[in-house]
Image (cartoon, rainbow, N blue to C red; front, side, top):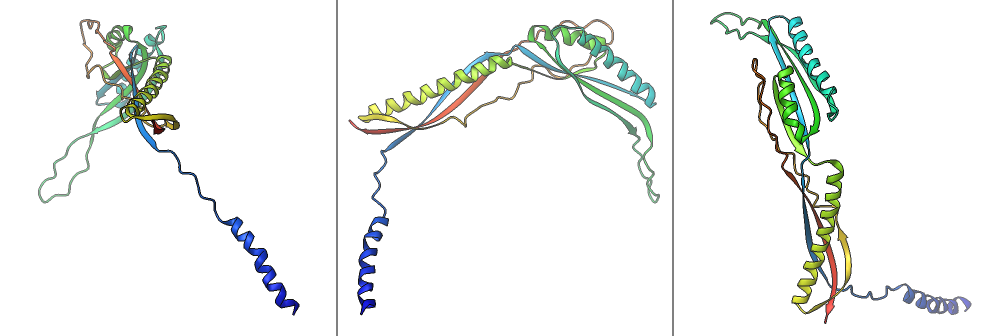
Length: 247
């Protein structure tokens, strides 16, 4: 008899526990409007990054190697003497043979190509102020460089960082202005910002080349080049979610 009385008692004790475990109804979240703001800042390019090329070809390896080494070292020494030149580095050194193109004769085994000469190549990178770039390029090519393999201009690091912060501020203000304008047009009231995402929308434009390939003159000194730095556009974007309610 005791067992039969115990079973209803267990059911009665379990019922309140089951009721407590049921999830409570959740409060609906307020509606959202999502906007995307953008900010742009233009800054001057005050630094020039230049890559000079050296190339020599000839029938024997030793003279070729000696010539390209001598000319590149003369240019490197001249660049080291310039107070405003920085980030000077040798980025490429190659010495490779040149092979003859042997046309196979009909009915005969093709012959192995023969070495007919050697080519030595070397590149040197450096950075200077834009106002010094033209003078340095002309004088370094006169000192022994064969070509300007590449050149681009950019803003200084501290200027770029300040511009990124300013662009981010402008993007946030632009997003807020858009949201308030939209809500006002629809007779809705701003309740607050739910989320802000500034992780995307960072635009890092590739540096634009400012000069084409050019070869050094053999006789008369080269005229000083007029290098214009131009400007870089720094852009940021912000995505903002804003809560609203009826007026």
